[in-house]
Image 1: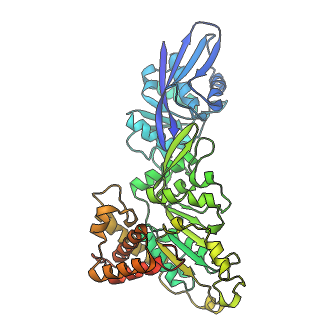
Image 2: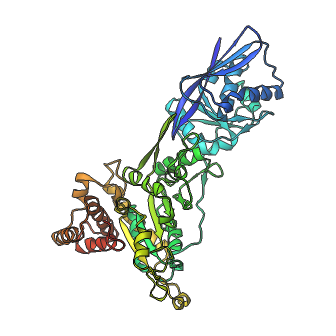
Image 3: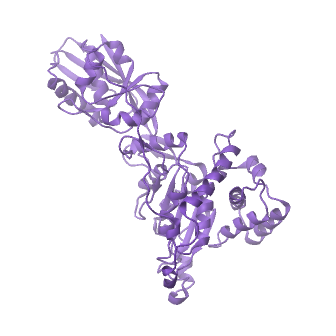
Length: 504
């Protein structure tokens, strides 16, 4: 007689249902696991045996065989412990077979029977909901998994609790969803003295998710500005929070078992490898660009990143997804992020400072910023110079709008875009517009069109650059609550396009 339970195997953010089949048959005592299982899964039999011994359940002197189907799908991770134990308990008639078959389970077993938290509870809950089954998971994962309201989530502390639940002794109370409250960093745009143009550029970037490059001398405030960007971004929508949290669940980044509505802010060091940035390594895990999905990817000292790493950003910026291709895995991750890059004007950093100009001007700057290829530079919608701030200005009182004021304007602009793109699910913000939709929504007035045509001819804008100017102009018009794109909007968009470098 074969008993069945169900679990999941992860392929990127997708959780595929795996049927755990357990047969107890006469023969020499044996406990085997088949079905393309890795070392962690193969070792599950020892953890299951010890956990059951802790419950005073002795395994029979028979041949116990566990098959993980489909057998050609790689199985990785310790979360197979609980479903294997569940199928075995059903095969031994300790719990009802139909109860095990109606459950998708995941969790690691300790030797004393406690259930240990594992990664991927949120995608597993999504898979259980699609399969119309209950999700059984460790207690520490319950608040995370219960955020998917389409299925019931049972969060147990021990294997003994699972047995008591399925035998009708002490039912497990369904888990309730938890949400992590957004923590205030205390960083405000008013803390930044001067740099009004850079603040405006970041406001536009946040409103339409336009990629921005800041170039300035060391200490001019580039990192300080970027650190305050999360304070003006709108909270994640329910759909965005689910998308982002599924990735973070696989990476083990969800804290307190809850879901956060705060947009992710990732800032990898410039020594990060290609696998760390775009994903890969053992199991083809998500990289920084996917962990920044629906949020911000801040890359300080941008030219210092390896050239190969920078070039890998070109396709994800355009498509919003990354295919991590390895010999044994082809995994697709979403990565619609806002790229904010910061760079010094040259190697020494003071090329643009008249008081400390470097002796190698202009070769030093051309060589340094030349590490950013033309095609990659072409993908920056906003390019802004961040000049040094005089020390006398640092004693002046704070000026300009606070982060709360700027955030209200950004939220209003995003609301206009949400209403505008309600019927186009693949387009959420102005940066996503393309084709006929871009022509329809961002078509400028005659004066603006004439200016854009002259700029395109004079500076040799690429087709991508031309369209990106239109997208930025549409966002500036949204900040002005203007139904049409007019000449001032085009002029401001063009000024950011031509601010840094000659690559368009």
